[in-house]
Amino acid sequence: MDYFVGDWDGDSRDFLALRRGNKFYVCNTNATGAPVWLANDGREGDEVLVGDWNGDRKDTFAVRRGFTYHVKNTMAGGNADIVLNYGRANDVILVGDWDGNRSDTLGVVRH
Ligand SMILES: [Ca+2]
Ligand SMILES: [Ca+2]
Ligand SMILES: [Ca+2]
Image (tube, rainbow, N blue to C red; front, top):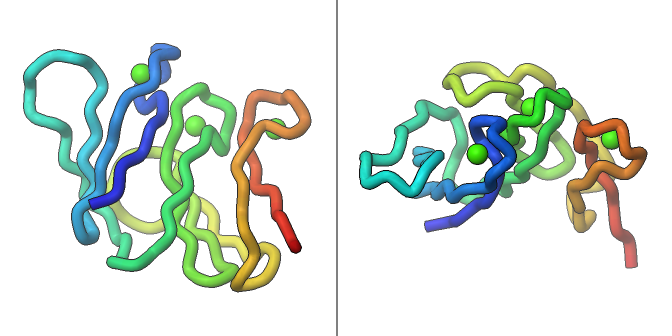
């Protein structure tokens, strides 16, 4: 099981999400309600990145396979909004708002 932290609903409070297999579960509040299950096409073993890719203040997932990234701007299931190739397959990738425009992008670390 993998855990992620992000502001999924854009209320500026970060909360937990978790992944079990190819299913994502997202919590938005401390309330005891069951987490929201998200259909997702992630595969076990994918690396998952969290960021606000489109600057709407809501964090969403991007799934990495090698140097291909499947970026989603919503929590709905289905195809990625953006598919891009970046860096090299064994790069260490960091997510951040490097230019201060409120949208997150990828950065690469090479040793
Ligand atoms: Ca939130
Ligand atoms: Ca967003
Ligand atoms: Ca940015």
